[in-house]
Image (tube, rainbow, N blue to C red; front, top):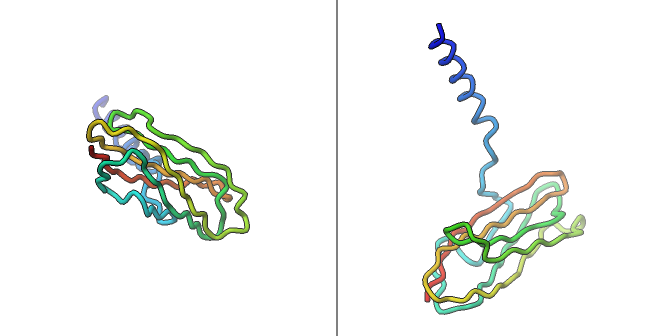
Length: 130
């Protein structure tokens, strides 16, 4: 009896868990122009981030740029507010300095908060090589 009850509870939790799953990271409203996914950037100490956020039927209220290494150490972070109700898209242009002493796998995450309360997010892995 306990086995059947445990199995029924397990199925119920397994069925409900995907419904609580966080939204997919890949946001079609965010286009990253630089760095490209899995791009290897060589012999540079400055990394340029360029992206466009173009939400449909809403606007961008703020966005955050975060770069971390494979050990989840924060390399760069910038948060920008945006009074963009009149804009159909927001152009992001930002650069940061990074000392290249060895090859580093990095992850860029762009997260935007929209006027309708949604958060959208895009992640781009890239490499800086010495």
